Amino acid sequence: MICRSSEELNQLVLEAKDCTKFGKVADYIPALKKADPDDLSVAIYHTDGTCLSAGDVQLKITLQSISKVLALALALMDCGEDEVFCKIGYEPTGDPFNSIVKLEISKPSKPLNPMINAGALVVTHMIKGHSVHERFERLLQFVRKLAGNPSISHCEEVAVSEFETAHLNRSLCYFMKQHGIINEDVDNLIYLYTKQCAIEMNCLDLAKIGLVLALDGIDPLTNNRLIPTHIARICKTLMVTCGMYNASGEFAVRVGIPAKSGVSGGIMGAVPNRFGIGIFGAALDEKGNSIAGLKILEMLSKRYDLSMF
Image (cartoon, rainbow, N blue to C red; front, side, top):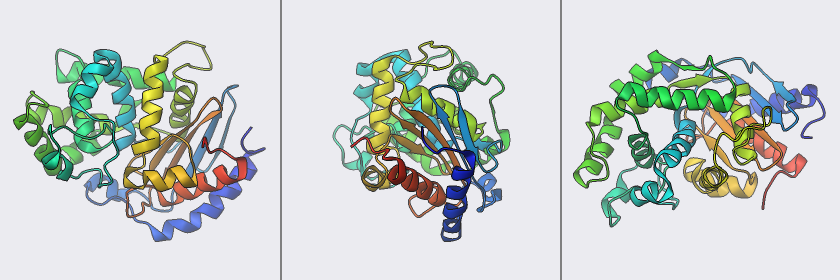
């Protein structure tokens, strides 16, 4: 078991909190600028259903890029591996998550992986449904099932804020539409994608989803399979190689677990066959990862030998 008590976890949070002064909240999405950079919380969900936590774990955050993992799982379940990876690659880019550079120089002009914005937009494009509303509801129901929480919803204020400022994402979509990677109305896709990113939950929910992935798609509380094994493993592999933006290589060395971050300050971790981790720390480093969240994971990995390598 990781950590013997919540008091021990609280001490790690207090130590990591010193790092928040070196980061800053995401400011390119107006609604996210309101976050308190000193907020820091963590939850660790074990396979027996016990959960240790520290900080204000009931505070809701929007998933942002963490949603890319969950949308990928659903798109793979909808379309199959061959169809999805015909339009998206598997490879890390080394570039920022919102870069257009590799799209321009790659032949064919498809995103290199599903964890960058271009790839995530293609993934969202592949979620099945007769309307944008139906596609979002299918994704939301899937997320609720993974977390075991039917009350999970989305933050409309953040969704609208992102939709109104998504100029670069629109550019990525138009470029990919020109090259036949997507074929739907760009604003419809941006509307769906920004609502996806605005799905909100607390650290307990995030840790529970991390645990489902850690167990290759099995819900430990019901023993029901929520994600096929091979799809859960694809998602975890891409979390390792691409999940922490262009700091994924360093993260693999320092922490060594599948994880995905978002610019709201969330991090979802999945320690294979052991537990799920949910973290929120709004202050980000220059790569877009929670600076104090990274510190907590480094300390946990070193103290409890979490690395899978």
